[in-house]
Length: 222
Ligand code: CA
Figure 1 (cartoon, rainbow, N blue to C red):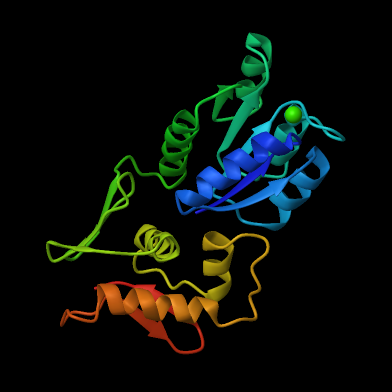
Figure 2 (cartoon, rainbow, N blue to C red):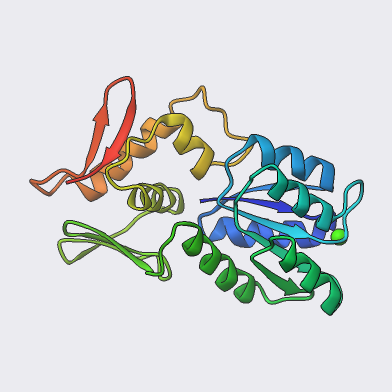
């Protein structure tokens, strides 16, 4: 899951990025409305966290242009003051939710998760495939009743596969959803992580779930 944070206040942006990365999300930060809009157009984000008070292009304008350009990514607005008018305008222009500053990270996380689930058309918090299950709230992964210990990145990778079961995922798609803007797609990092993940979820089980399609990508299926 990849998130774009459009926020000019370095402290707030850094706080969100750090917290979200600890929750295994990949996070890009844009420091003004112009940069944010450009990044939203180029990359496939699963969620955009958008501050309203921004230099160059303000948040409401970024929101309006995103929706005009048919960028349907869920958008969570951050409002500096408890301005009812801004919130109503934002929601009318296509924002999905809002949060008033200052906020607790736990609230931002809860709202973000809810929007990410909605974006996937899912209301459930546990994803399942055969005897493999992944809990998106506790981050616990089980195979055949036994807990599988994953690193943050491995978890993030598996969550992306679990959300896209039976779909062929290319390295580009994986890079775009699991890694951030600074990721170098010319490395074999993805293959290395896939191998680690495969060892942990498939190695001791006769039925393999994570399959390689040579020259194409990977697919998680029974
Ligand atoms: Ca701001």
